[in-house]
Length: 186
Image (cartoon, rainbow, N blue to C red; front, side):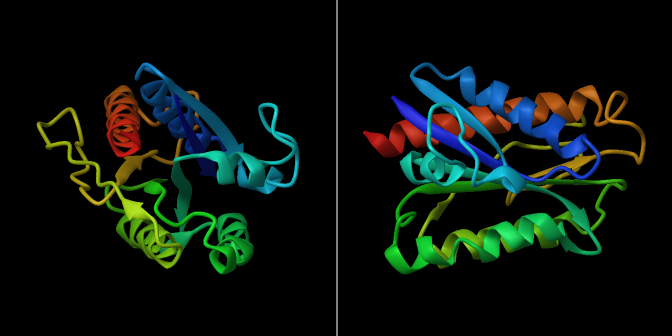
């Protein structure tokens, strides 16, 4: 059995919608349990764990998610990342697998900078990064990101956007990550 936690912040609901689609992809892989963690609630109980921290520590894989604001992750995500220093000191997340996703209102929207922030965060923790590895065929990975998942939210309500193509890519990304965790666990 693999445990995967998706640690995300969502300012307006778009990133939560992406996190839920990634979680659906993770859940499609047999023997995998996924925990959706809003990082602003990391100290609260989560899925039978005493806190989100305990869920993260018990997971073999962590997927980071944040909207891209002003060229980087949101302030609440950055606050969460800064508070992981005790995990860095203890090596609690060393050798776990990691991946990440971001969304913004435009096609590129500097999401690459947020994804590279996640790569750096994971690397500092001694984690192993899993790229998206989905080719751009005009439908899947239409935004062309490879280091992680980049989704466009078109500055509309979360009920409307991100669109179906990006949500399908999100599900494939979640499944890829869960399969990588299963292989890593062997």
